[in-house]
Image (cartoon, rainbow, N blue to C red; front, side):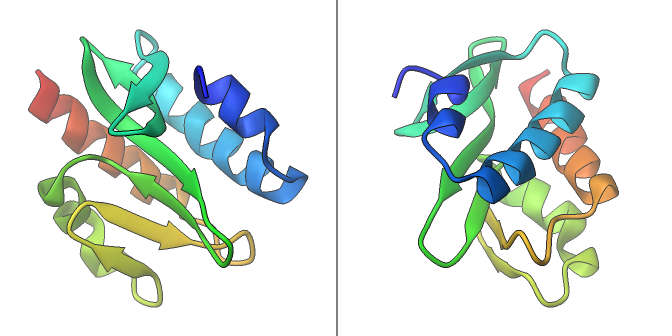
Length: 113
């Protein structure tokens, strides 16, 4: 997997569309973000550091802001979603709200500096 475009191309249309929307929101806030890999995930990188990773699993999709603090910033707005230290899981039927994606990205951008 060379980059985000390649990874998204390997997904079915609903997953690809869900991730494309999240990517577009992230790139609005971080237009300098570049495609790449981080920790084995297709990811957007900013200033050489991971900004937001993407992974499709059998029963869910996940974004990885590579930061427990970023997840904590949005935790109270994600009732019904599966969260862990640095991961937010969702489905195409229950997508992440745009404001949550923006806040995840803003928090991570602040950490990257």
